[in-house]
Image (cartoon, rainbow, N blue to C red; front, side, top):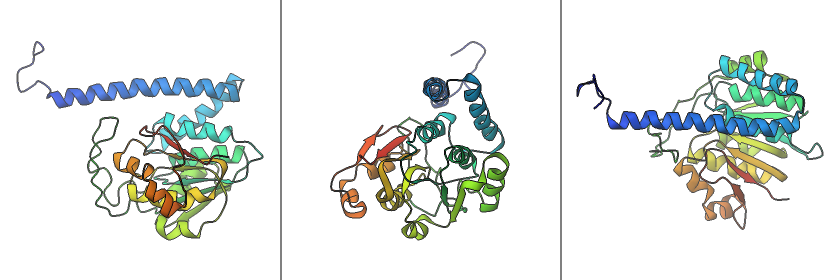
Amino acid sequence: MPPGLNSKEAKPVHDLQEVGMKILSLLQEYKELARLQRRMAKLFPLYKEQRQWLGRFREISRHIESAHNPSHILRFLLAMFELDPAMEGCIVEAGAYKGGSTAKISLVAHHIQREFVVFDSFQGLPENDEPHDKSLEGHSIRDWFSGGKFSGSLDEVKRNVEEYGNISVCHFIPGWFEETMPFFNRKIALAYLDVDLASSTRTCLKYLYPLLVPGGAIFSQDGDFPLVIDVFKDKEFWRKEVGCSTLPAIQNLGKKITIIEKIK
């Protein structure tokens, strides 16, 4: 026991483990950001341009409560910057929360001249009984995803995007995914899912993946949740509900950001 601590003052082992995991996660985040910024340097050789974009993204993070790490969304934003201008399709987000990621995506969508479609209930997560326990990153996600969590109203999201993003490229589709997505039929170049639940992931993949253009991709921010991973690996789901005879190309299965591609 460290000097100066009695048995009542000593931290429980599980608390120390949690602190250690947070430190490791922070180091990994810095490492990933450094890697992504090197990739960004190829797109924007002038350091001034890089600094301006990263500064705008940080400004949004300072003012809007977000559910993503900077590296999570930056990976998607870089994929947007790298899109072939000749490729068809809009940008889609499913799960806006309070509009932090929405504002960032809207800035890049405007820059690359793409329409940006935002799906969200704007009432938080739906009621569910999914038994989430731990992320593959090692931390508990128990009780994280009860009904109503991660709620941001449509008015709140729009205000945030108007102030910090570019709302001119945005089209908002409010409602539960299973009620709104079946009627959507636009071609999609890239989609970003931050929906938390396995059931919501299934709905998004069922209706959005068939709309991906060849070379397009869906990025899931929930790729480290075991129940969501089960959806990605479910061959019967892909065959019967999505219409794929084989599993699609999936990068980083089990990692925080999982990417589902439609091969050209």
